[in-house]
Structure formats: C-alpha cells, structure tokens
Length: 316
Image (tube, rainbow, N blue to C red; front, side, top):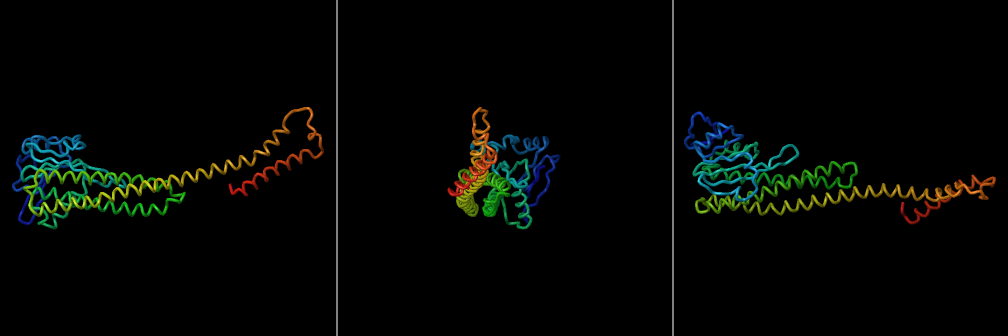
C-alpha cells in the first residue's frame, strides 16, 4: 500500500495512491510505502526510483548501507522502536529524499508514523516540505524514546521493592530481562538517530533553513542528554539482576546448610549403630541386659550434644 501526502492550502492531505494512474499526484511531498506488493514495487521503479529496497536490505547494519547518496537521492535507513505487548522491538524504515519528495518504505506498522499523521490532521503548519517530514519523525522518535526511558525508571523502581521477596523472584527476573532488551533497543535507536541527523547535516547542511538547522541541533542535544540515562538503566538492571541472583543463591545455600546440619547430627548415632552392627564374636556390650536401651540413649545423647555445639557456634 502506498499513501501519498499532498501539500494543500490547509496542510497535508493523505490519499491512497492508485498505481493504475501511472502518475505521481501533483504537489506530493511524501510517499509512505507499507508492505509493497510486486506491482507497487514495479510501479515505483518505473515512475520514481531506479532501485527500491528489498525486505532483507532493511536489516543492514553497516553505516555505508544505512546512510548514502546516489542518483536516486539521499538514503537513510532509520531504526524505530516499537512496543509489541511487553516487548520492544526495533523496526527499520528506509527513507529516500529525492529532490522535494520523500519516499519511506517499511514492513511493519510504526507508532511514531501514526502519531505524525495524527498531528498533521490538527496542525497544518507542522511540515511544509519533504525534509520537514523526516526531521519531524526523528523528533517524535526521540520524544517516544524519552517516554520509554521514563517507563524504564518506573518499572525498575517498582522492581526494587520485590528483589528480596522469594515468591516474586521469577516474575521480577522476567521483567528485568524485558527491561534490558527494551533499554538495548532505546540505546541503539538513539545512536542510530544521531548518525542519521549528522548525515543530514553533512549532506544538506547549507540547504537547511534556520528553523530546520535549529531543530536538528535541538534533537542532537536531546540525544546527548538521554544517552547517559540508558547507561544508568543498564547499570541499575545489572545491579538488580545481581541482587536477585545473590538472594536466590542465599536461599539455596540455606537449604543446603539445613541438609548439611541434619547429616552431621546423625553422624554420631550412625557411627554407634555401625559399631554395634559389626559381627565380631566377643563384644561385651551385646550381652548386657540393658545394652540395647543404653545404645539408643547414647545415640540420642550424641545427636543432642552435636546440636548443642551447633547452637553455641550459631551455625543454626
């Protein structure tokens, strides 16, 4: 599906593109391509671009594949975080800035794009060019990342109350793993956005308006202020993981200690029983009238004596 955004007097109008017309709407500044069909991909290649990114190309990690300039224009492959249930995943969106037209390609729905479309309906002066669109998307992405960081702080603050609660350890560890994955995506997205904006400054610096240049610098400043927070969250997650692991090990050690104490308590009685269980011909105690009760009493007394020693040493 291809959605065209056309500049009108009242702002941007969104319209679904019909490839049967074989033409681009006049005054269109943005084409949003979502899960392209083979026919739509062929139409884009014939009418606008020489090369349309394939699905596997959206996952390239090398900088030379994510930010480059060719005959089609300026290419930027930008990473957007997306919440799916409790999990946060990274979705790559490819942008091609060709003259006054921006073309975006994506295979997943992105919350930031939906948010931009909502803003465009209520603020006709939000964007006025293709470059404004991509800059506004980067700005909204940083705001969204900031919200995710705040959510991370709140979640970890709540988790800290349950670190030493045995019945909630498993749930807390699962939440910490989710937070570590989310924070990793936030960290990657911040670095990726910083590289995207620096690439725009490098390629289009002189062509940027004063407002656009100021917007880029403000977003870059926001990124620099958010990066230390992601590192702090990593440290806090590691601390809580270590605390939870240490508490679990302590609980296991207590169980092992209990079994060890029980084993030591029964060692003297076991030794006595073993001695009198030997089949020697001459064992005087075996002929005593009260030999059996005395043996039992001796076994109980030896266990009690061992118990008292453990209590005095405060080993139990």
